[in-house]
View (cartoon, one colour):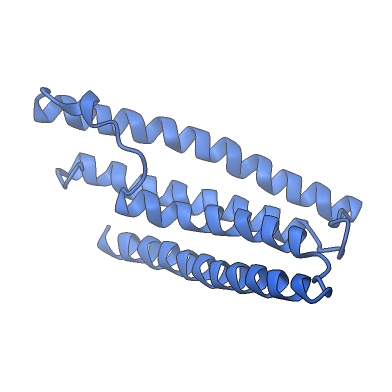
Length: 161
């Protein structure tokens, strides 16, 4: 269990590093574009790069956010309940998110396969879409692994918050 948990943690941290690098790239690109626009030389395709970068930033940070539990938390739903009820609510919540993550991951991978088959690219600088869609699908599958670790922690009596 501990080796599985460490592997999942390393995967989610690796994805967060990719998201961080993308964030720096998007920020630098945006600043550079603003400066060059002032001199009359805008960078072609910045809108495409920033939009796809935003998707990477959000998608690739989701597994780490789930692992660290830094996402939205409904504290009032847990107040005044016993430890057992809190564990049941935690388990139910994680099972629901697991199901939603599976549906999203499956559809993103299917979308990526369709993009590859049709050759779909961005309009201005022709960025290939399918690796991004499949990568985002993989992020949701890794988030599912994070949720499996958290579910196993509930059953093993580990921390539930």
